[in-house]
Length: 411
Image 1 (tube, rainbow, N blue to C red):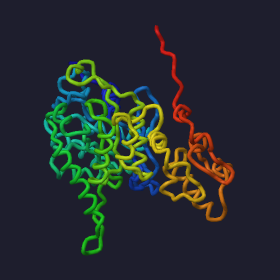
Image 2 (cartoon, helix red, strand yellow; image 1 turned 90 degrees about the vertical axis):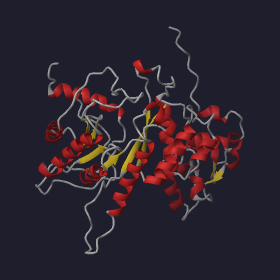
Image 3 (tube, one colour; image 1 turned 180 degrees about the vertical axis):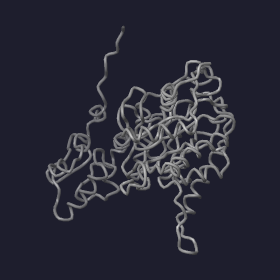
Image 4 (tube, helix red, strand yellow; image 1 turned 120 degrees about the vertical axis):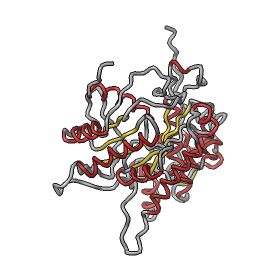
């Protein structure tokens, strides 16, 4: 077999990395090289892009170290039985690509994942070596996100956290039964133990020693996880409840949802349940409601159809439509928790409402200036000069928000 060039490896392994999510860097430790002693920089703003094979300059070099893998997960394009072109970077090649792309102003950091080669320890050891060389040998101060391997030696994962801004360990699928069915080499209990170890390592390093010194920071941007949706029969209610447990148990920064796309030669092994990208989008919206708006999974699920989110309207609007008896709310009197449940009112708008109404009563135009989405909000609120009247009673209120039907193409 002909030896692959570095450019060809990059094309293969950057394309293979598109299935990996969770590349946001918000919360990372602030480092920069303005003192002239280092290379690269990172800030608290989100860095969630990658370097594409078509030459576009994006913020994050997002690659696999290799797409060779000894596992045979039915949903994964890189599984051992898959007929795909394989490639592998050496640790030195990844370091070279990262530093050279940074010098050319293509990237601000590295997102690194990998298939499993030889053994989990060997693979994790190479990933740690890459992060260590970047930080210690090249003084790289940009963002580093490592997709860690739960079966690897805990000492390797602990070392990875000393060099990476964020660690992530994939839970793979929403339920243990699904993991056992479609990824038999992976152990859900081991995945949870590894996630718990990362949480404990982060918490233990927040405390000062008896001498008053703080230990080295461990994965300062926290940990995240990725869940494939649509590869098994789990509905959205089950997915959201699983996410709630993950957030609570492991103090995750994010749960990322990845819509499953059937792999041509694996259709016999998996149910043909391909969620459209809009389903993935609705799950992110529901996740946002749980993290910032005070909703819980059961509340969101109560407005679902057979446990699945409404694909035509967003989850907040779907909840409001199914709880019409709670509306309309008086914007000048309602509590913050209730205002956050009004469609069209975001957290910033609600904060402005609370600040302004300490001094005067609000009118319709005030909400417009505050940035409220009044097209959605007006059936659910009252103000000094606005009452929805018939809007709050009409039976076809949902139809006003749902997209109009489209004529299907016959040819």
